Image 1 (cartoon, rainbow, N blue to C red):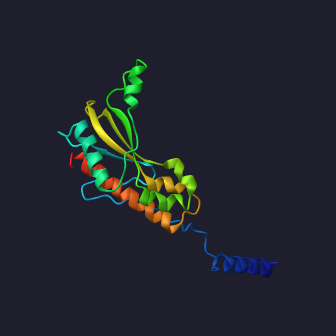
Image 2 (spheres, one colour):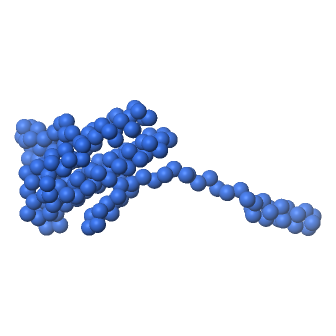
Image 3 (cartoon, rainbow, N blue to C red):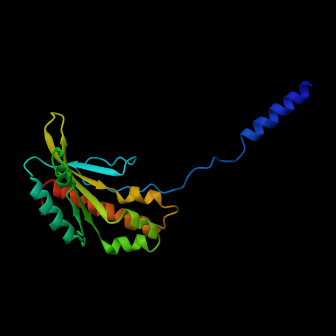
Length: 184
């Protein structure tokens, strides 16, 4: 009986030390690359947010977004002034609330040809909004819906789609960084 127990214990020890490795996901974690001075990206959320620098107006941000995006081969096919629609319902929108869409067909096509279902995330969106800061004073922000985060919804994205989403996000991060400073 004692020999059976020792043999069983030895067998369990050998099995426990085998070369079987646990399954580890080899899925590539994509994320944009921020420039010096920008907040780090939180890879658990689709939103990347930047506070607009003091002294930079809403119109400065809009003009910057327009100029910078055109210079990077983006079109701005639509804007949605959500705050204005909220006002029409008799509700105070509590500051600026709007969404601007941006499309770069060169990069988008690289994703859409491999994964047409990615169209549900198109075009890319940048929001301009005000919300209370630490002192409960309205502060202007720019928020980006991150293309690399959206790509997580695609099963087995191709390397071409991954590269395009990465480049889209990097370019949009550069655009919102400059726009938050009022650069043209």
